[in-house]
Length: 449
Image (cartoon, rainbow, N blue to C red; front, side, top):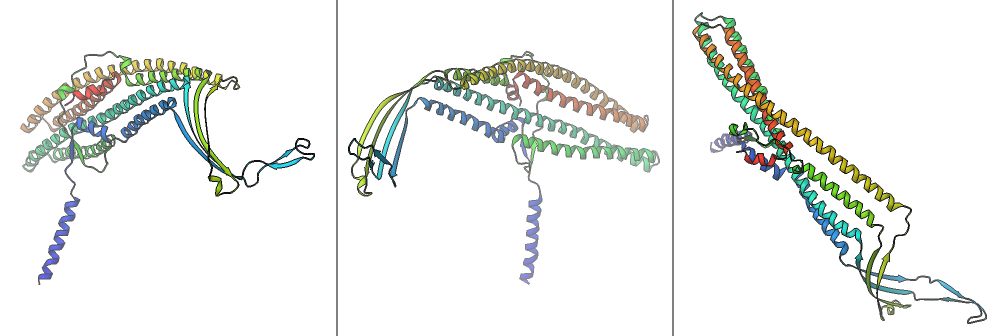
């Protein structure tokens, strides 16, 4: 009997475990600042650009190595299986020509050499270029961080507006549930018509359909946020719906653009500097180069393999190597011309980009103030529609207003809600676009609560 009781208990425990595992864990709540911090720490692109910074530092070390001593050692072992025959002409040592083999069958040579660059202007230019390249890698990392912040904030604001819309729909659903309860009592008492009751049920069903669609859109928006944050899409998260709206609607005081403060402008300017250094490097390719060297080695030889390593003869030398370019078929001249043309293109691109930055800023400024005005207008319309709906609802409950009047007021209120939510999202997006166009996105985000 005891064994029979154990089985149901085991099955119950197993089922409880399965049910517990099937229940979703509580979501992790993220504020906007926490979302941004997580994105900067976990977005895969951050790792790539951080590695680019490390690569630039290593290239700087590589460039410096050009002016440091270069030490190399080599060793050779030759087994002359068939030595070359040299013919001595007749008359010198003999009346007949003599065939003779010089050298030994086994020859071993070990040598170490130190080379030191003394004069090479291309190396000095390369050192400066790598300094600029390191700065450029740092700027690109900041630019990537700005992109990560922008994508995270945009995705977060989208969820924020969906949450606001969800609150309004839930409020409407509760209101319709109460009205349906009253209308059902009136219908049962014969005061209300069945068609009015059915129309109210249709409106309630529409609200529930909107809520269902909103939950789907919210899930998609959360996935977009998790992707921007570099988070596993299976992780359960939610956002902190306590953003300070009074701070959000405060308009920026400074509406001017300092182009030189933009990261994009700084990157293009440093690219021009790199191109200028490339022109200098190609000019210096026409200059002679001078290097010094010191060599020390030892060799041994013999015809018997065992004895060929017995006696070593060392040697050493020091010297200078001067390389003077004379003619290379105009290769270096062509490279210099190409580099100069590339520099002109880079300077023209900077001028075009500067005008584009001004255009983006002006458009972002216009969109911001228009969306701000539209949001305030829609907020006033929403408040007015809410008052009308409230009065119409009371009149309908008292029997002084028809169901048609109530539904018309309710439709106007829902339309005002939708317009307000859209204008709110437009304003938040326009504000982020404006701060990004002005180059103040990081400062703006740091001011958020």
